[in-house]
Image 1 (cartoon, rainbow, N blue to C red):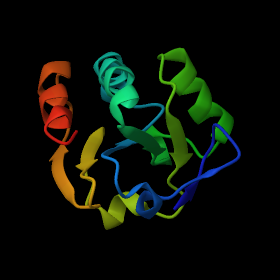
Image 2: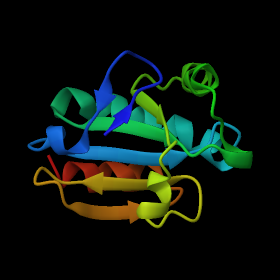
Image 3: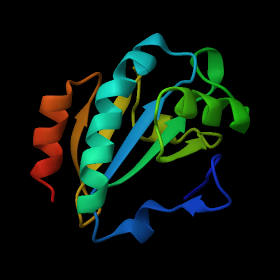
Image 4: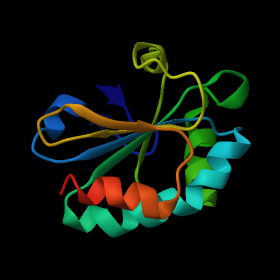
Length: 132
């Protein structure tokens, strides 16, 4: 569970059981993450009404931020309207993230069923559709 930067709430992956979840590890100063945003936004916008949940975690460091307002500004400037949190607890390390962006899809039972780096809208859509 992580406190969200964009609203007064906590995102708890365990509490999302029953819904597919997209978890993105990214950085607000990562050019590849910025390039991923248009396709990611299309996928999240398309499948949220069908039950997909999404959260991005800004990993901080040289490619990210530890400033919640900066993370929110990144999302706002790129059309992302899903939840964003700061990865202040090194969750990315626990997930074995070594490149940004890294996207995980978690099925309705809470199992990670897909992991990828940069991905096209079509390929990500196909993976999400299989979970709905």
